[in-house]
Amino acid sequence: MTAAALSTVLRKHLCTIELVESDAIGIVGVGEATIPAIHDFNRKIGLDEQDFMRNTRATFKLGIEFVDWTRIGNAYMHPFGRYGYDMNGVAFHHYWLRTQQLGNDVPYGDYCVPPVAGKYGRFALPLSDPRSVLSTYSYAFHFDASLYAGYLRRLSERRGVLRTEGKIVEVRLSDKKDVIESMRLENGNIVFGDLFIDCSGFRALLIGDALGVPYQNWQEWLPCDRAIAVPCRNPDVLDPFTRATARSAGWQWRIPLQHRTGNGYVHCSEYISEDEATTILLGNLDGEALAAPSTIRFVAGRRARSWAGNCVAVGLSGGFLEPLESTSIYLIQVAIMKLIEHFPDRSFNALNVAVFNEQINLQFDQVRDFIILHYKMNNRDDSDFWKRCRAMQIPDTLEYRMRAFRERGHVVYSSRELFIETNWVAVFLGQELIPDALDPRVGCLSDALIVDKLDKMRQAIRRATETLPRHDRFVSEYCAADTGVAAAGTSSR
Ligand SMILES: Cc1cc2nc3c(=O)[nH]c(=O)nc-3n(C[C@H](O)[C@H](O)[C@H](O)COP(=O)(O)OP(=O)(O)OC[C@H]3O[C@@H](n4cnc5c(N)ncnc54)[C@H](O)[C@@H]3O)c2cc1C
Image 1 (tube, helix red, strand yellow):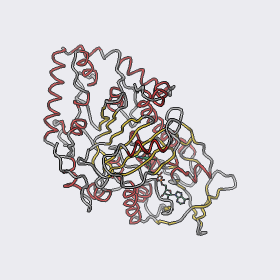
Image 2 (spheres, rainbow, N blue to C red):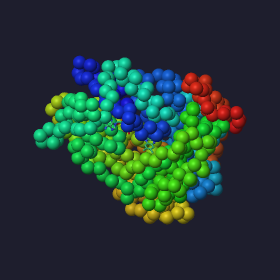
Image 3 (cartoon, protein in one colour):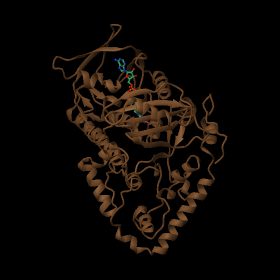
Image 4 (spheres, rainbow, N blue to C red):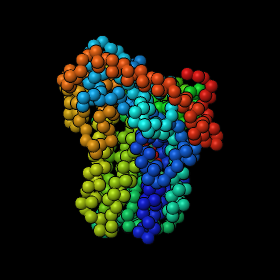
């Protein structure tokens, strides 16, 4: 992603780009679910959506369904879409809460297109006409991360990037040990550079091993430290959403692609053994496993600074947050875009570097709080893991946001953040954080009028989603890979 973006925006006379990677090591390759921000990235590097989807065997994603997070049997979606509409300057959720007080039990998700379309396995591209409810949602992709990496590598090479295959065995620093001068490869070749971008994954060869930038450990809030991943055959229906199902010591992801479904159990090794976690994962697949399960170890957290000296960490070398909200590829994208915005000259202006670091840290910290919210607000009593998560102290920043919502239904966020009001409300209400008081301006409309308006919204959404095609059919027609769409696609819903 970094080479593709830099080779698109930087002219060759300004700099040359050399991508060093090792096929023998390979990539993590399990990052398969994205969020709508990926459109900005793909557009900036000039990808054609259908070509990209065919080449990465992608499907569409309308949100993430959280199953069993509050209690076993409960489910809600964090969708890429707007709920109802605001009235008299008052946010929609206040009206929905008012109807709940009046005895209405229609789920919040029924006022938003993605949860309804998801329930019936339907998808189409959103419309641009703002008068249609079908303009009120967005979408992202599930794709094969290894195919995406290869696709972008070929694109980068066409744009002049020199790719060097080889294993880095030594990173050489300046006398003061604050700047990287070169890297030695296993075959003895030396790679020199002015700016080094560390995309070496969890190894963090440059920013961590060589420059020694500390890693801030967030395990006290996000104790999961392992994931077991396994692909399986697709079920009959290709759902247009990611599913995250809470399990006894973590949660399981399910990501449907055209040719297979990606699955994994993110768990905390203090509460479950690897064998037990593997058994649970394999016992909860939609189809036959297509490979042996593999284990990935990690520590939630981030570098104190993503940029140090002449080195910028992009990707897992800069930090890791579990994929509960599919944010890692987004954080990569932000780091790349911020790097372009703050592109250095050889003097490496200190303030420029500090501003970059501040902005990256803000992004990580906000995503961290959003993920912690899911754990903190659980009501499960069936395992020590969930009890521990409910009892944990949370960051002050999250405590403040939760109090603001609990006491008055307010959402505190800044426009520089990824998650805005609609995202926070979806998860607050989904996790059953119900405000004690509503915006008093709700009383400006009569209860009868509120009930009537919400009913009309719900019906409009239901009617509109019924007109959408099935997701698997849409994928087949829009972007089927050469291998075709492997969901059986025979059952009708
Ligand atoms: C369990 C799990 C699930 C995930 N799910 C999602 C998800 O759903 N959505 C999402 O957005 N993100 C997800 N992610 C994150 C996503 O996988 C990563 O952000 C993404 O793969 C990018 O990783 P990376 O490029 O930083 O590191 P890697 O993929 O590990 O790539 C490292 C690169 O460095 C090279 N390298 C390493 N050492 C050397 C060396 N000595 N010499 C030469 N080259 C070297 C390797 O060859 C490789 O090319 C997930 C991550 C994990 C662990």
